[in-house]
Each structure stands twice: as structure tokens, then as C-alpha cells.
Image 1: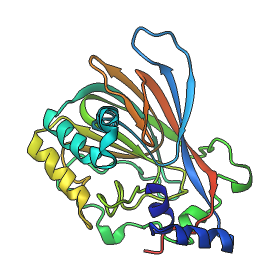
Image 2: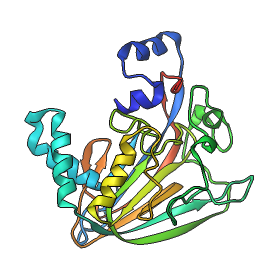
Image 3: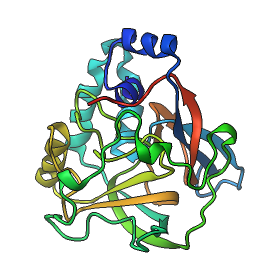
Amino acid sequence: MLLRYSTTGARDPVTSALHIILGRKLFLDAMQVVRWKTASTSTIEPYIRYAASFAGYGFYGDVISESEKYRWMGPKRYDYVGTKIFLKHRSYEAEVMFEEAESENSKASLHTRSKTWPFRNTTRSEKILCRANCKICNSKVGWNSASTTLNPCPEKTRWCRTKGRFLSIGAAVMSNRNERAPDGLVVDAHLSDGFLHLILIKDCSRPKYLWHLTELAKRGGEPLNFEFVEYHKTRAFTFTSFGEESVWNLDGEIFEAHQLSAQVLRGLIPLFASGPEI
């Protein structure tokens, strides 16, 4: 559902069928996730998985793990378990390192949208949203959709580090628009621009976290504009947990990892779609 809504702007299968009949095709980014260690005492044994839309730890991992006990409830189990996990308000200590890229044109940092609140440096009208025949997604800079491999990084890059207690850690490949988040996790995320959207929710009070979730649930909201939210646009990141651990949620599948790395693969997945019209 997330993939269909984010790539066509519609939820019905008829729209998807029409794209197949008309031969409309685009290429989607994917995230390659490498688990290096399952637990702190484990030996290093690399294990590779892929995610097409989202990878989440903490709140997201706890919800998907706990919901396995209530499969008999159907989709409603996510509402029930989500409320339950929210009330428990667990946070996890972790270290995240991410690659900071600089724009080749402006040499300005492409990451950051969090250090102060409210964040007003980028208004909604200034954001370039991903739509059908998106120029950003169709650009040929640094990649070839006919033979997609690891995304080369011609720009100068440096790695940044952040460590602390987090309620959740999320990495979005696309906007992930859905009924509960009409604008998605990141409203200006693109389907094939070669970037991940790293969202770190620092430990905060329940009311503040609820405020963030409320902004996420409404159209035109600003869920990233809080002092306890770090947002980074990046091509790759690493993760290491400390102490009590949660699990990762990779496109709805449980993935245990004490230490992992992730990077975006630009245009890896061909799909019959043209991008959202609205």
C-alpha cells in the first residue's frame, strides 16, 4: 500500500494496471542493509537485506515485533500495539554515523533540519515535491538506470556522528505517504534521487512525542520541526546499539541487528508507475 500510494498517488489496483498496460515505467531507489553483528557478543557475520521504502528502529521495531502476538486482530493490531508502545515510552541508546554530502552546485550542506525549533529555513512552498515525470528523479547525474550499481559519490563527503538515547530511528527511501500520514514521513522525499532520509527522534516527554505524531498525521504538518528531532539527508549511515536493544523494521519485516550499515542504491528497482500526480 505504501509503495503504491507513493509511486502512483492512488490506492486502487486499476491505476496500477493501467500503468502496466501503457508501459509507464520508473526506477526506484532501494536501501541495502548489511547486518554486521546480531548481538554485542556475536562474531562479525555480514548478512545483506534490502528495503524498498523504510527501515525503522525503536518505536517502529517494537510495534512490528509486538504486533506478531496479535495477528488475529488483522490490521487493527497496529493501532492497538502502537498505542501500547507509545504508553511504554521506551528509548534506546545508540550511535549513528551518517555521510554528509555537499551539493555540487551550491557546496551547501544537504543535511540538517533540526538543530533549532521551530525550523523555518525551508518553507513548504520552497520544497520540491516528487511528482509524475520528476526532473530530479529523471536526472542522469551520477547514475545510469540501465545498469544501476552502487551510487558513485563525486562530491566531497564527510561522516558525522550522533550518539544518545532515541525513541526511534528511521530511514526513509521515499515519502511513504499513507492514510495515517498523508504527506508521508518526509514530504519532499523523492523516488529516485539517490538519498535516504534519516530521522532520529531523541528521548523526550510523552506530550512532545505525541505532538510530533500529531503533526505527522495531518496534511501540511511539520513533524520534523522539533528540537528533539534530527533529520539528515544522506547516502549512507551506520548504526550500533548499546545496552537494551530493540529490533529493526525493514518494510514490515523483523530484522535483528546490534550493528549494521545501510546505503542507497539509486534506481535499483524498475516499476510500472509514473510518480504521483498529486
